[in-house]
Length: 149
Ligand SMILES: Cc1cc2nc3c(=O)[nH]c(=O)nc-3n(C[C@H](O)[C@H](O)[C@H](O)COP(=O)(O)O)c2cc1C
Image (cartoon, rainbow, N blue to C red; front, top):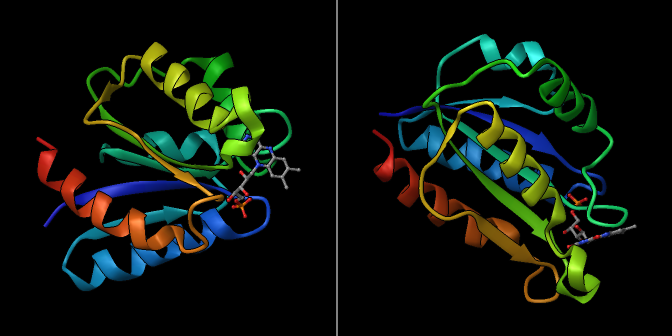
């Protein structure tokens, strides 16, 4: 059994639905998933679990409005997360070109700056390729959990 905290950012619901499916399936498999659909910066210090972020990309490579306050506070307050494992599932659309999955790049930079440790490669899910992001995300999380210390 592994405990993780799952931070969610979504505009139209795909990333939210993906996160809820991760929560549902991995909980059934005996893991503890603390899911935060409207995260605040204080949620980061409420436990010491590895952090998983599941977000879509909006605007021009930007974060969903619901995740933006968390991100801005993370950048402003820099609450150190030294060595804390994290990774990101980012939804995007490759037709956006240079800003493809830009939200993931922003979060990765911010988490690395506070000393968190990225475990494994991020997962990018392209809306051009799939309308069922959870079918890629759930197996990816299963493998990610195995890599955690
Ligand atoms: C207004 C708008 C802007 C978007 N901008 C980007 C972008 O800059 N880069 C990207 O990779 N995807 C972009 N997307 C695609 C979304 O990230 C993608 O469709 C995603 O699956 C939506 O997830 P959500 O339903 O959780 O918001 C954009 C979508 C919309 C509607």
